[in-house]
Image 1 (cartoon, rainbow, N blue to C red):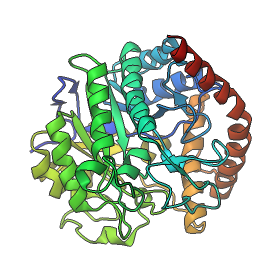
Image 2 (spheres, helix red, strand yellow):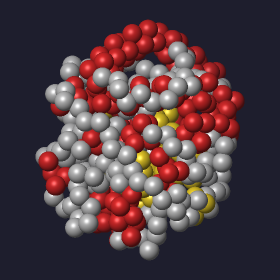
Image 3 (spheres, helix red, strand yellow):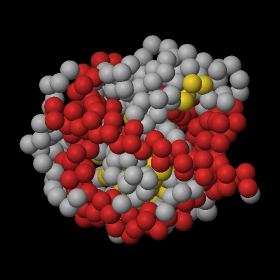
Amino acid sequence: MASLDDPITLPSGLRLPHRVVKSAMTENLADADNQPTGAHERLYRRWADGAAGGLLVTGNLMVDRRYLERSRNIVADAHLDIDRLRRIRTAAGASPLVAQLNHPGRQTNRFVAARPAAPSAEAGAVPMLGLFGRPRELGASEIEGIIAGFGASARRCEQAGFEGVQVHAAHGYLLAQFLSPHVNRRTDRWGGALENRARALLEAVRAARAATGAGFTVGVKLNSSDFRHGGFTEDDAERVVALLVEEGVDFIEISGGTYENPALFGEVEELAAGRGETVSHKEAYFAGFARRARQAAGSVPLMLTGGIRTRAAMESLLADGGVDLIGLGRPVALDPDLTARLVAGGDGVALPRYALPTVAGVAGESEWYEAQIARMGHGREPDARMRAVTAASRFVAGEALRGLAGRRRRARLVARAEVAVTTD
């Protein structure tokens, strides 16, 4: 029976001193060329100070400069300054660092790209405050290029000294879009049966593995469900877990939802179904599926993220054998010393609640925590007194200004890379 302070060794050989992991959250701290900055270094030094040597997973590193999740994501393409990325790794000190790799697909806001890309166009734009344009369908060669991008980005992270990468296939981003029959209406080898819909994810994992050396950790973040009719289901997710185990992944993080159905914020009624006897769904949103996925996962460590707040819940999740690692996101954005306190026997932290309407509230809540992250990146401590409505307005205004201003810069860099490939 595992406890929070028990060490664990991943299949890659990476040893973690305890079971608490800082899960990925968007930092949005890159410079105008989407390069790492000193703010990232200060942020990860601060998180490492409170992590008791535990694993830190970065926010989204993009594999395609044309399509960003946020305007100031780091882009891990051929233009990446690996020395600057290496400084983030150095700042993390004794804490292992895993980079989350992502492509947002149709969840690219219209300020960054007026026409996002998706497995198919039929599902239309993400209906969220008019922030997303109608996507175009990716061509087969483009899909292969994106998959290669995951591999190349993983190699750059390894060169920067990172211990591993996490391939993001949750929260409605591109690889999750391929998995979802609601979004993926293709009839070629990338769509239809689940084995085809899972192909992009599995090949991205293979690309990351092939591009890196022995002992480099490759994990996956996977939705338990999209929580929508006609979408990716728990039955689908259980089968994908088994496929990922066959690929030899080193850990699988369980989450859920999309921008349209924000289960990651606990906003979906269906989460009440399948809750355990000892852990409320209001605290551990996806615990029911994690227990279900245990058999399919075998000995591959499962990490659960989403709504976990108290030490009692964490110990309960570990004790029943369904979960091996506890992922904390928003709690450590508000209290960066929380992990060390938990490992030492302390309790969790209560988080603020928001009264904004659902969609605006999700944007505001996300930005509220991003603002706390930015404060740490600039050498200050989090400020729980910040108003949610202020954060929501910053989300829209900030993306509009930075996203539109950066379009030409990104286009020039993409064109330069294409010329270099042609010349080679």
